[in-house]
Image 1: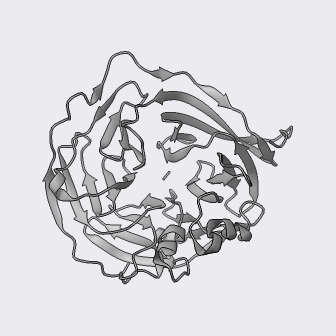
Image 2: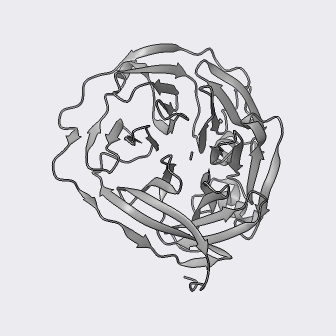
Length: 357
């Protein structure tokens, strides 16, 4: 589960990758632990999201997943750490550092990883460019220079095209747009309005949101800025749009006051961080949820039908970051408490409401 106007000319080349850093391979006894059922705090029906942790692997501080995750065709997991890419076996037993491009490339801080539709290649998005890895041995990468501050959403389309969701710098001709379509040769098209603000930092932080491409080729966007809204772009290219749902009981419009207190950029406010279309066509969205006057984060998992009916609103005390589709229906990877976890997510009829917490 998981996309323009002209930009500066692309610098494209094949980069030789270095050798593995000494001591960066972890083998031997597996640190993977068994699964557990994650109990919800609050359920609002008629249905409920159920999360089961299939396995969990604790990781060292050196591996932080801040650049996202991607899953190859054979189930191999790539983790976009701050300093390098890490490769993990499908069940988490082994971990090693993937060779990185030479320092002279200026790739910059990793922002997101994206497996292409056939999962035989992976795109790494950074602040200064993108690198396509056609093979998971990490021996070469095709680098294209382009510049952005953050990427709250990324989705792969067919024909080696992908969409990035982000707010652009003020001197870029695409600053008015939130969704940007790319091919391996560069920028193709931009659409969907950026967040309206005079401060460019507010624009980059509030524009766009998580996105996903559906099996039918549509693009779904969960607006980052309040209120809660999901928009569908049939065909994934911005030629037409429809609002699937807008619901202020999930994220109200006045949440913007917490997002931009006194015109500054806030931290503790509720916003979508992940969206995916499940196998039955229903739309799953994960919201980073902050209770008023509490610092801890929680996860609000919302399921909406294709017609926009809210089927489930289930809140958990566990907040999973960097949720990543694995290619198997209902199975995701995520990051929590310095660990990678495999999640099995189902939606079930709600029989007994759990008490509010």
